[in-house]
Image: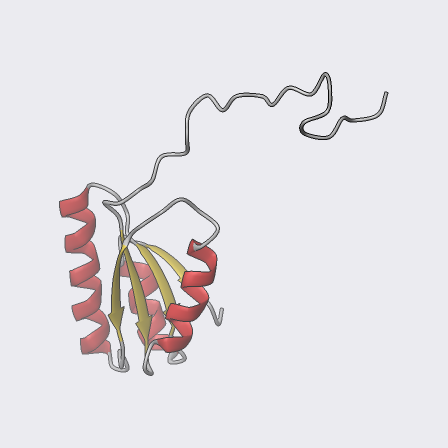
Length: 114
């Protein structure tokens, strides 16, 4: 039996039970020790594969331990207030800074260099 083209006799399109839910209450962070453009570009290409309309937050120039702790506190606050883990796309070259984010962040960290 050969498959039938849409519009051909005997062709029936299967109905969709329900559309995919669009997630809107999630925050996505783009954390970088540079401008954050690479993290944001890569992250957006990943996010385009899903029905998600998150709040975007770019945090560039996170290049010291103090800045890393500050952005971790912000991400953790978002996790607590939203009731779900933010997604964090990171392009951090400094291993100490990355370690702080990975170990203390309550978000789902996607390290693009590691």
